[in-house]
Length: 414
Image 1: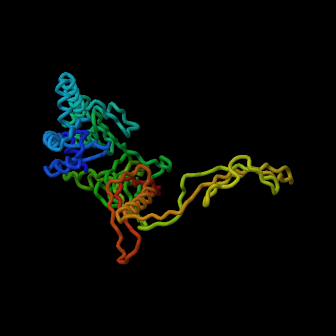
Image 2: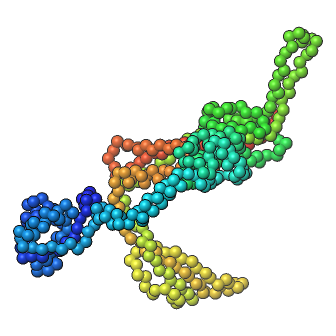
Image 3: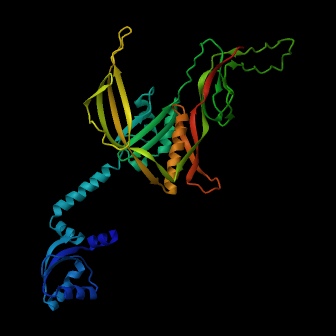
């Protein structure tokens, strides 16, 4: 149907009123000669309204003459008629085309640059680093190498751990993540190691104080020292011209410091979710009524709301306010506010893909609750669990790889 309408629009079609005593013969002759008529509507004893493509109008004149009928064109639609109208308005067409060309040219440039995610780094510093890689206001969109801009920002700004550049329309968005230092809870003069909170693969390490004992690409386990608070001085090279008796080398004593720094690692999480192919239960319809009552002893007076609840099944939410007692005297008066929420039974059938999508969403919601603040999901993979038995349940496992800070303080005694 869509293809037919599209072709009719491209080649043009007309609506016409045909008048005559042999209208059936008119329609049969048109059909026999391959002229397609549609939307045939009887509007009188000897009148019909039809639609036909533009190419069929001329042959219909001969058929009307042979059947003693007459027709009158009511409306014309399609591209041929649009072009005819445009020929009469050349100035308007030229202006519209010129406007589109100018609009296209203007939309090919970047006019706005947004900086997102920077708290300590100034916007000007990020813009300066991006400008050196070719991202500036007024540059052509296809001349921007987003990967080069991202790398330039990380090279020029050491406190940036990640950068992303996205171009959409005339706006470029530069999103950065600043390196966050570990907040040490121990005293500054107390020796502290930074150890791993979780098992993972080290991706980025920044040492401000202490000595790194792992490097990028190392796999670490929970409790393993990442940045040591014990700093051992480098040994000076021996002078072969002097003997040990002439110049005995002093013993290098280690320094103990409060280790400071940041360690980011790739951490793997696993979540489970399931969804029924056929689910039954009760759910809220969105309809509700509110009832405010005052109770005095055994009597109840409805101050607001209906006397009878208009729902067959419902849930209630009640708030009760009581007059506080005085000494040992309790005043038996209370004001209750009850909301009645209508519920109804539902029976929902899901396709296999719908159930799998729902199970995946449940698993991801569980995983997101486990992710710490500031963690960024790098990759995720979904696997369906096949129990080998026929059941109306879809089970999935979601595996997520996240980039997060894994360091924590661990005081030690030298």
